[in-house]
Each structure stands twice: as structure tokens, then as C-alpha cells.
Amino acid sequence: MTLCGRKKSSRMLFTALAFACAPASARAGGSQTCPAVGDPAVTARLAPIRGEFDVPAIAAAIATGGGVERIGAVGVRKRGTDVPVALGDLWHLGSDTKAMTSALIARLVERKRLRWTTTLAEAFPGFAAAMNPGFRDASLLDLLSHRAGLPHDVDYSRYAGSDLKAERLRLAGDVLSGAPLSPPGSRFQYSNVGYIIAAAAAEAATGRSWETEIKREVFAPLGMDSCGFGGVGTPGEIDEPWPHEADGRPAPRNGPDEDNPPVLDPAGRVHCSLGDWAKFVIDQLRGAQGMSGLLSAQSYRVLQTPAEGGGYALGWIVARRDWGGGTVLTHIGSNTLNVADVWIAPNRDFALLVCINEGGDRAAQAADRAIAALLELANGRSSR
Image (cartoon, rainbow, N blue to C red; front, side, top):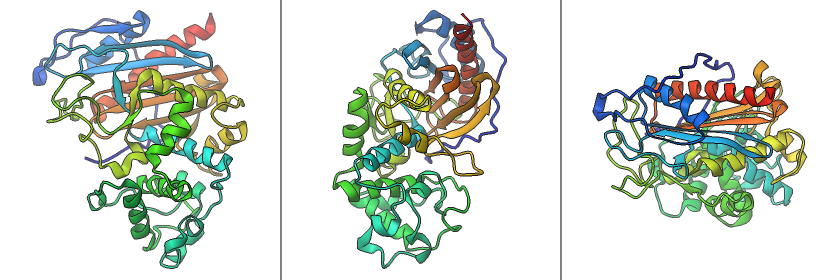
């Protein structure tokens, strides 16, 4: 299993919509039912998309600065069963976790535990002398904007110990002893490793694990009570959305361990309910409108502003869309067994969120189509 989460800023939104509920195919034991829960306007649009792309379930929400406006879900938790998804189900967010890690770093910057310009040599004085000179002046901003010259991934099986703080520090020492792939700050190279090292810097500054700190500094203040790490559900029980392979087959197992290794938590292992994810997204939406919330208005500007000439900020791709009234924020996450997609339109005061319990290109296309369906609803709201 690998972690993927980069959405190119040139990715096009699908605009074609279907409105007739179509059953999922019988392939791999697909359910012939189309269970739905939540806002009928949402589920009426999600049902045919689920049928067309033959994914087990889709959950989606439209939020504004005032809260969740519409939310709904269609489908089953596991292909081949008739167990429907529920509005309170937990969904794996993949690399949409990165914006949360960036928000945690911003909290620590505001508390003066770190600086955006903190260098790797300053963050890790214990092995600064052994660090490759090319990395010593790389900053937290370089790490979080994927401009530190780091690889996309490493062999995470080497960092499988139970002390995640120690494992991340060891990973940082190993990686930073080698040469950067490019001079830090010079070019964009998407890197899960960079977010792990940024988390290790936060752990070094606080003395506490990233998992402890993100609960204290992000989840608790926003009331995100359902958040956890890794795969969802009780192993062997269909009590949450079951993960599915790209070809639609249910994964052999479910539960917390059906995911990438825990050392990757800061780069892409958060799960939560759709409603709780919306709380984080709403806070980011309001921040993009110049308001303070979890963070100061200045911190949101840092998080949501890409490097000059680039399109990736700190956990967000920044693009322009006419339907969004100009600048929009977006990201997609996947651990190859789930997909989560989000778009924020600050100038139109809405955000669109979609989760699917299947990985691969077909699920990503279904998420894209669902975003387009939500966009029609959001535009209808704004025209009233």
C-alpha cells in the first residue's frame, strides 16, 4: 500500500450529471440496492454517480462559514452486503491530513514553540552536525510546501517501532544525512517524508507525539471528537465503511492496521466522520475569508498562500475557478483503499466534501463527479 494525495491544480471538474438512481453492478458481489441517508437533494445526485462508477458508497457535504448546510450518503459499507452507510460513519482522509498537520505547526508557531523559518539544523540540534549541509538551512515552510528536496516516500517498514516519536526522529536523521534531490526552496516535489519530518520537528519542540499534539491543538478546539488514526472499523465487523481495492474488491481486512504504517500519521492517516472533517474545513474556509478562528488571520494567510510561482501552499493546492469566484483551495487524499476530496470557495462562501470507501482512478473520478453535483446545489443556494 502506498499513500497518494497530490491533486494537480489543472485537474478539471466533471460537469455532466445524472439524476436517475442506478443499481451498482453485480461485479464482485455488488449490492443491487441503493440505500441512502441524509439530505434528499444530496442523495438524489450521489445515487446515480455511485451506480455509474460502481463504488460501494459515497458520502458528501456542502458547508458554509455558518456550518454544514447539506449532508448525505448513499451505498453500503461493504460490497456484497446490504449494510448501509450512516451519516456518523468514519472515513479515511488520506493526504487531506496534511492541512491538519500544517494547522498544528501554525498553532505551535503562534505559541512561539517554532517559527516558520525554523531550520532543520535548529529543529534537530542533536544530529545537525551529521546532517547533509544541503538540508541544514531548509525550513519548516520548505517542508510543508514540498520544496525541501525530499523524496516522495522511503521504506517505511524500517520505522515500525511502537514509539512513533522515536521512529520519526530516526527517519529524519536517516533521510537528512543524505543529499537533497534538489536545493531546498528551489522546486516543488510532493513528499510525504517532508510532513513526517515536520511532525518530528513539532515533537522535538513540544516533547509530545504528533498524535497527542494534534488532538490537543486541532481536534479538541474544533470539537472533532470522532478523529483517529489508521483504518476504520472493528476488525472483522462491518461497523464502519470497509476499504476497497481499486478494482472494487473489498480489502481482505479492515480496522486500524489496514493502512500505511503509523509513522505516516502526519502525512495521511487521519480518519473521522464527514461532519467532523467539515468542522476543520469550515475553519479553513473562514480563515480564507480573513477571519480568525483556530488560528489568527495571519496564520491562515501563511497556510493558504503558495510559494511564488507555485500552486501548492501548506497542505492546500491553490487554484482559480470561475465557479468559485476566483481563488479556491483543494486537495485529494487516498491510501489506495479510500478517497477523500475537498474544494473550498472562499469568495462564494462554500466548501464541498466527498468521501468514498474505494481507492483507485474510478473512485477518484466518482469523487470528481460528486463534487460537480454538489457544486450545482451550492450554486443553487447562492442564487436564491
